[in-house]
Image 1 (cartoon, rainbow, N blue to C red):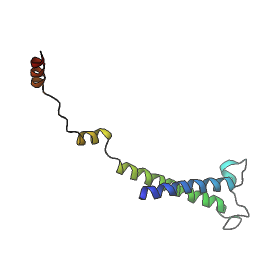
Image 2 (image 1 turned 30 degrees about the vertical axis):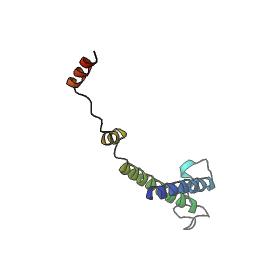
Image 3 (image 1 turned 120 degrees about the vertical axis):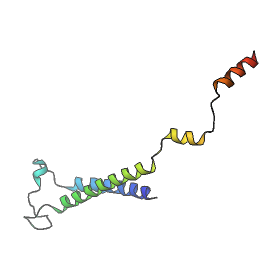
Image 4 (image 1 turned 180 degrees about the vertical axis):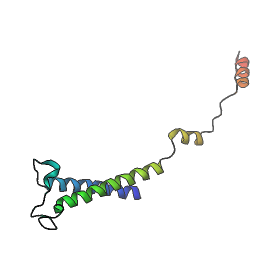
Amino acid sequence: MTTSFLLIVQIVLVVILTIAVLLQKSSSIGLGAYSGSNESVFGAKGPGSFLAKTTFLLGFLFVINTITLGYMYSQTINQSVVDNMIETTDVVAPTAAETVTETNTTK
């Protein structure tokens, strides 16, 4: 139940994060493009634009959600298929003496 919910949250975060990245202003400077603008939350000398802060927050939530999903999936899948087969199978291999007597009686 919780992994299904977290998987849905993951998909929603991916869509919103993609939209937030695509809405940002492109610049040839690269990552140093956020050097104070009129659209920032704290004014022209603020630490970054609202979209940059939103993108950082969404990216952080995405990483935390990914780590949580990985941990939850690793906890639910702690046995291999072979372990499950051994527990459910009650087949016993014949011993060497039984095999020899069966071949002697068939001759």
